[in-house]
Length: 315
Image (cartoon, rainbow, N blue to C red; front, side, top):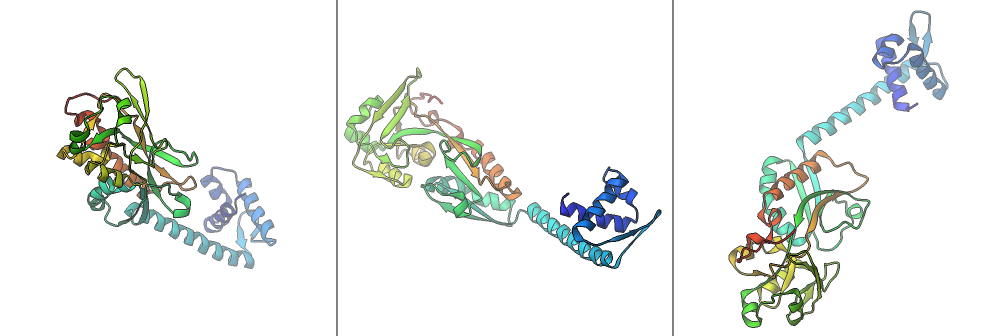
């Protein structure tokens, strides 16, 4: 029998003055309640109640023990109320991890609206394109792009990361525009080392046929921000997440190429530590951003929104 349950039963017997009342409250029998009190007495090695045929009274030890038990139960109730109040107010710190570009473009700009809804919450945002261990870093929730490698994590999918092949107009003016993935071999392709396959770029054509091409170039980086800037400078061609270039595409600083060949999309997940039940503040944060991303054209829509020739990209 759980020790706390025994304490609660003993206190209710004392305060109600009647075993049968406690039995009705717990939907059990008077005999079962009596056995719980006896079990507690056996654990303590002393008599707590003096029983008669119609009533019971506390022994001296029973009186002392009841007072201590009442203090313990009151303290637990106060702690429960404080936790509940804190959860309802959604206050305190929330440690969040995300890739650098994603945090810059899609988390930070939305924080004012989030704070307007939850002014007592403090977000501690850690931006890193490399893998972050949630447990050792004390992260409450992390945004992850791609298939999850750690099956122990609790995940919720909140969006889709579409990819595209892009280049600056200046690069295309100098070197021409490739018409098929295979023609990328004759171009300077900028390699983001955060990709699982590094310099192998995958595509699917309009008929669903796969195309994989091994590319090469004179620049690579583990930073998607660095790859973006090098594409904008006209150094070479990028194979990247569409949301990194949303503003650049709208402004014409880069343009999509190979629009008839779609790179595979990737899931956008939020993940939690497996040993933690997501709190109300975590759930509120995730729900807010899931709603936001459902309306975001760089996440919810496809490359067709930017393709000048109107060619629809396949999912």
